[in-house]
Image (spheres, rainbow, N blue to C red):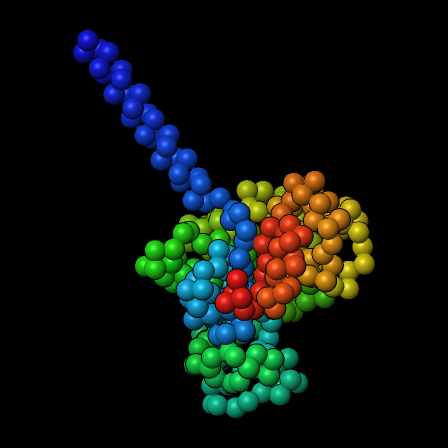
Length: 300
């Protein structure tokens, strides 16, 4: 009888352990419908900043979308452009940059302690009149991930997903950024150290960075970004890429019922960008897309 009781207890413990494992896996599952805040919440807060990410979390996004570049001292910095954009930048001495001046301020030619002295939140953005203004600098990816993970936990939110874009192109290699392989080699450890690798997708228009990930870090999910002037078919784009990624992310104007079906037939998610009106979001949801990237996560 004692032996029977022992066996029954063992079965119960194993069952509990199995249940916990299933629950953990389900918590890390890709969202049924992915609500992505573009550059955090670009339409509402200064883009690619920690306040923008926190606002997106408050609005219920499932994924934080952002861009990363590399500084001269090999820090992974959250920034859409490899330079300081004239639309959002104020210099340490309070100067407003012209476009010509801004384009010369390459982040890859600056150490991070210099980068963080520039403000990217107080200048009104000409394209986003609802954007709240506040003093803020470009954060390190490591700092942002630490802040968003803590904030989501504090707010009782489900574990966040991250969609991180590598800002590379062949003409910029060695000038505006490292070549794809050293870029990826700097990025991956930051994500791993933050403990969010299983909930991270790395996306790019530059198929070279995705190919590096495929060969060196195949455990990472990837997404192929497709610009609105890309006239190739899905099959042609995937042939050039050389593999089927986790997700296909076309400009929203390229999405058709046929493209949605073709992506799903290949086992890919389809997550279009950047949809900034409620009607557009609802139309694409009706086509069966797996998620949407928007500057206005308050539209979800």
